[in-house]
Image: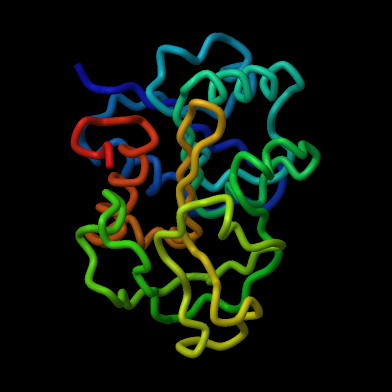
Length: 219
């Protein structure tokens, strides 16, 4: 039986027009049964039936107090959580969420081509990639560096694009443990074009699969 994902795309701030393509891409990854919602009440009930909860370019404060409590309890007890792109622009009013995710969005330069450095190639989200990955995105800067509390998978080569402000150590994707749960985050995925990129789709599937503890994505 396929693992169930709860994919949440509610936005209370900027809304990415790539969301429909991203939801379709997650549905097409294979290995997952996907339930998509923008209803905050969906996170107020039991979440144990889901292998992972995915925040897919969410923005702003999107959860109710009950939903915050339920999500925190779910992850701490061993549930999976994956955040994609603007998930880092979410729940600024909830301190725990910043800890859970590992870092919060600060700003980004213009959407442009650049280079991704693959820091760890043994993870399911990165093992299909070569050491350098040419990509086009918004190259998020973060308010803090998650290194030290997270396992860094990808970082940006700021010399390859204009406007980066984090310097040589600029994480873009990482994973971490929170309580007994697993958390994966990738800053990539701004545009619908990413959803047609086989490398990005494999990155997404590997990361979500790791958070959800799929057998082939366990490492």
